[in-house]
Amino acid sequence: MIRLLAIAALFVASPAVAAPTPVELTAPGPQGSLAGTLLDPDPKGPLVLIIPGSGPTDRDGNSPLGVAGGPYRQLAEALAAKGIATLRIDKRGLFGSEAAVADPNAATTGGYADDVQAWSKVARAKTGRKCVWLLGHSEGGMVALVAAQRPEGLCGIILASAIGRPMATVLREQLNANPMNAPILAPALGAIDSLEAGKRVPQASLPAPIQPLFADKLQGYWIDLMSHDPAKLIASVKLPVLILQGTRDIQVSVADAEALKRAQPKAVLTLLPGINHVLRPVASDDRRTNIATYADAALPISPDVAAAVVGFVTR
Image (cartoon, one colour):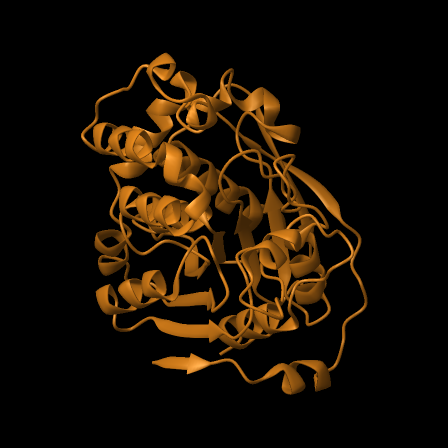
């Protein structure tokens, strides 16, 4: 089932729910506590666990690398207005979850999935729900797929702006898509080839502009991430799956969403016209305009995102 979302009017017309008070929760991490925020407007309604994307992304969806305005917080508030509870979390080793591990750069997809399982247990115990929904954004989609291989206590998964092809393939495509990368393209692609093969590359041997991307301390993370194939993972998922993909996402393409759908034909694929990677509306195909929305704290996310989630988890 593939559909273009056109239900914003229905979403707006449905009755609103009083805003709940945020509740701080903790879950056990490897070496210390993980931290998160629960918004629970209706104890009888669904509960969605929001899994952050790559890098230093906090529970609100903000990042010191250029994302502001709290897209995950905005999504949580929009869902709360429709009676849907959310739990949004800080990743191990970062922000409120800093004590969970000594080195956040040593994190792996499997480790993040373990944390999701820990959060699922805490959320169910705290709220009395039998299961929780996982919503993985960007890299969080891969984490959701790995976590869903152990489906106990999970209602289903929602993949928002999630890659559907191996990470090395997507990274090559991202680098090739930007003409400004021409001077560093050959060594960057060579580094990807090596990491995909499980081999590290001396950071000092790379051009300065790409050294932060392939820093020595991050190469274990890249090798681990590139070892997972999202198409193979989703093919083995037995839970309900919603694939959400914006048509103006310049980091993850519609082709990724379609690859996920092909691998799991029972999944629901919803395309969000004009929406970019951080779930915000973009008026044109101009790359600079698109990127400018990431740091625009005053720009809300599209209501179509929450509408799609509400429609799926309340079916």
